[in-house]
Image (tube, rainbow, N blue to C red; front, side, top):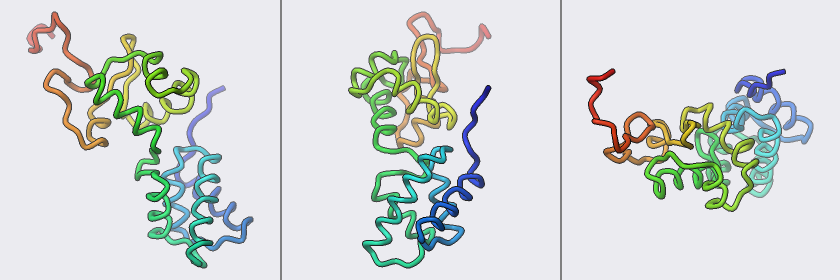
Length: 175
């Protein structure tokens, strides 16, 4: 059996239905904004929707619009791709400390104070799907999209998400 992430359209339906059950006013664009940042997971969509509802309640907003959802999710530190603070800590650790990788999962787990299972089952699948990281035999590496999302330039010895090694000539004449 294979489990796939939900589409934005499917999650939009989940958010709209959940908002209706909670008596929360939400327009289509507001539901779509929450769905886009839900990591392809209905449970996350529901959690984000409830948190946005809390912001709406405090602000006295009768309907959640795209702009309102965007503001609330930004305050919750959920970025445009749906990455949260832990995802960014993971990416930043690979970029800053390990110069883009490769780095082993045990090392990352220790550095983030998270169990290995959490890294492999919660954090990495979505980052891999987005193409931000690569899971290689040598360890985890930050891909070009990962560097770009962090707003960083890869070090000179990093090409396409993998570092050049001690015995690499740097040119591709042998390929």
